[in-house]
Structure formats: C-alpha cells, structure tokens
Amino acid sequence: MSKAEAKKTKPLNVNPELDTPTDLSKDAVGEISAAVNVLLADAFALYLKTKNFHWHVSGRHFHDCHLMLDEQSDAIFASTDQLAERVRKLGGTTLRSIGHVSKLQTIQDNNEDYVPPRQMLRELMEDNKHIAAAMRKAHEICEKHDDSGTAGLLETFIDETERRTWFLFEASRQESSNAA
Image (cartoon, rainbow, N blue to C red):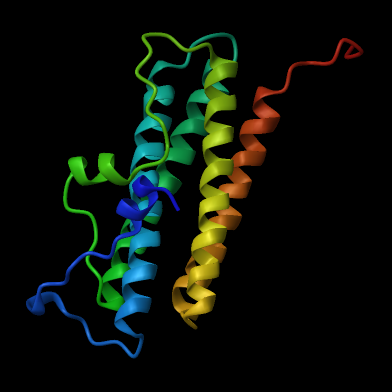
C-alpha cells in the first residue's frame, strides 16, 4: 500500500459525542468506514462529473444522452446518503466538506471546456467500472469483518453501477458499417 493509499484509508477519530454503539471491533469500524468514505467521495466526484457532462453534452444524440446522464446522476446522488449513514450506523464518521471529498476521491475531475459526447460517455463508463471495482474491494473488507449490512448495500450499488456502465457502453458504441 502506497503512502497516499494509507492516508486515504486511515480511520477517522470519532468524537465521543458521535460514538454510535456497535458490536463490530474498533479496527473493523475504522477499516470499513475508511473504505466506504472513499466510495462516498468518489460518488460525489462522479455525480458532479456526470452532471457536468449532462449540462454540456451536444450533438445529434443530445436528447437521449442528456436524459440518460440526468437519470444516472440522480442514481449516483441517491447512493451518497445511504453510504454516509451506513458509516454512522457503524460508529464511524464521514465526509465533512468538498475539501474532504477532494482528499479522498480517486475519480479524476474533468475541467475541459469541451468534451466530445462519445468521449464523455466513455470516460463515465471507465469511472463507473473503477467504482464497481472499488466497491468489490470494500465488500471484501466488509466480509472479513462480518458486516453483512454494508456488504448487502454494496451489492445493490455494484449492480446499479454495472447497469450504468452497460448503458454508457451501449450509448457510446459506434455504428457498424454493416448497418442499413
């Protein structure tokens, strides 16, 4: 594990006023909370990137892409409260600011003035694949600590993320030269 990864997975100290009772060990709470907080930071980063592309998509498939990206951003945003509340249920603490998000996120921002529509979809597809892989790793941590609640939540989000990946892939495919 690199120094940057160690910094990202370092458990947050919990103020005694926020110490939620749990049967999980302190180490389990710290390890699971750290993994889920990175997922949460990535969800916020992917939400904003998806909204950015939703607002700036152009071209002949504008309507379909605009609607799909709006739907996807809503689904991503809906996951954030569930992830954060899961960390709190375990007795951990979660994100507190945009700065905190920027320290933990592994999804790269896209600040370009213009991104071609197909490139937008492909970039989002890769980001969703990245998040699904990170969720699987977090799921392994949950299984190691017998945290079925967080594992189950992640299973649902993995499925939703794979669905977004599939839709982005299909929407970004180039038409075959054999098409009529």
